[in-house]
Length: 521
Image (tube, rainbow, N blue to C red; front, side, top):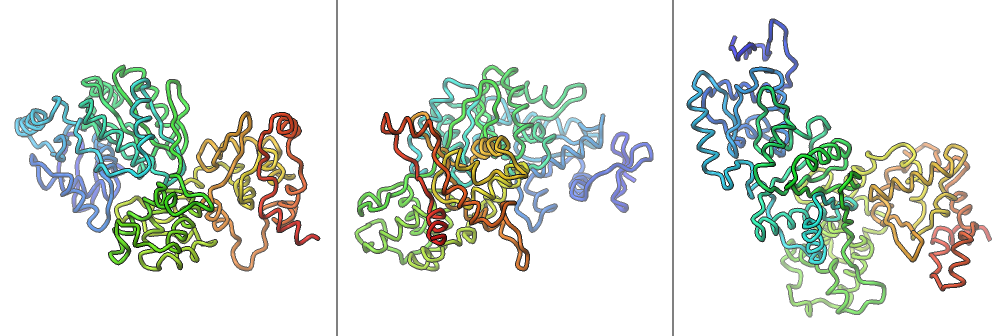
C-alpha cells in the first residue's frame, strides 16, 4: 500500500482508499496515477502519459487534463502532490519539495511574459485561408472594440480555421499572448473551467477556487482566450465567459460555436459559405470563385495526375463539373475538401454522379480531424443531437423541401395536431440560431433555406428502417404535407409590399411542390 497524504493506493487492487473507503477513480485516471507513482519526484511528460494510457488512440490533451483533475479532486487537501510542470507534464511529489520547486521555477523563467501558459505553440498551425480575407479583417477589427467575439456558422464552415488565423495575426501584430482551448471532446459542462485552467497551466491551490486561479492568471497579462467548439457546452461556456469578462478587464475572448453564447457584451459574427459560381457562369468566374479554388487546391494535393496550377490544362467539361460540385455542396469548405478526396479516386464525372442524393456518404476528412468532421453525416448528426424535441420534428418536416421558404410556408408544412404553429415558429427560430437554417434577408423580410448537404443528411437520418411504415407528418404522407404548402398563399403583407415597391417574389413553389401538382393533375 502506497501512501499519498491521507490517501492510500493499492497497485495490485487498482484501488485508492481514503479513511478505509475506496474512492471512485476511472481506469485511465488510475493508469496515470500508477505512472506517476512509479516515477516519484521526476517529470512525466504529457507525451509519455498519452502514449502509455492511450497507446492506440489519438486524443486531445483535454482528455488528459480531465483525468488529472479527477485525481486531484480525489486527493482533496493533498491535491498539490500532483504538480504541473508548465508546458511539459506532471510530477508526483515524494518528499523532495526542492526538486519540484526548482523544476517549476525553471519552467516559469524560460517562458515569455513570465507566464508559463501564454505560449503561441498552444495554437494549431496557421494555414492559408481561401476566401476569408475580408472575414479575417472583420474579426480582428471587431476584437478591437469588443471583449467577446463569437464566430458562428454551420458545421464544417471553417470557424476554427478562421479563429486560428485571427489568433496568429494578433499574436504577430500585437504580441498578444494567446491561450487556445479545444472543447470538442469535452462532454462534461462542469469541466469547462478545468479545461481552461489546464490550457493556462493553472493549478488550483488550497482555499482558492479554480475560477479564482484562472482569473488571477489571466490578469497577469492582456490575453486572447480562444474557446473552440462551444455549442455542446454553450450554457457552461456562456456562464464562464460572463464571469471572466466581468473580472478580467484586459481579456479578449474569441469563441467558435454553431450558436451564439447570447450574453451581455457579446458580438456575433456569422461565418458564411465560400462564394460559388452561379448557373451559367463563364470559365473565368468559375475558376476564380473561392469554392472552386479550395476544391482545386485540395484535389491537386491528392492527385498528382490532375492538371497543375495552370488552369489552361482543364477542359471546359471539367470546369463545368467543378462548378456543379461547388453549387451542390453550397460552398461548405469541409464538404469541398471531402469531395476533392473522392474526386482524386473517382474523377470529376463520377464524383458529380455520386453526389446526387448521396451527400450523406461524403467522407474523407483529415485523419487528424475530430470524429464529427470525418464524414458529412457525422457533422450534421453532431448538430442534430443538440436539438430539442420540437426542433427535431420541425427539421424533419421542412427537410422535405428544397429551395428557400418563408416562415408561413414552414408553418404550413410542419404544423399538425401534435405541434402548434407557435411551437413551429419557436423551432424555426431555434434552428436558425443553431446554424441549421440559412437565413436570407430581403428588405424587411426573412427567408429560410436548408443547405443541400444538411437537407440530404437529415432526410437520410430520418429515413425509416426497411419494413417500417412511418411518416414525418401525422396527417399522412410527405406528399400530402408538401401539397398543403403548395396551395398556400404568401403573406398578405408581403403581397402588398411586393406590389407597391417591387419586392422580389420568393421561390413560390419548390420543386417538390411542382412534382406534387404534376402528379395530381
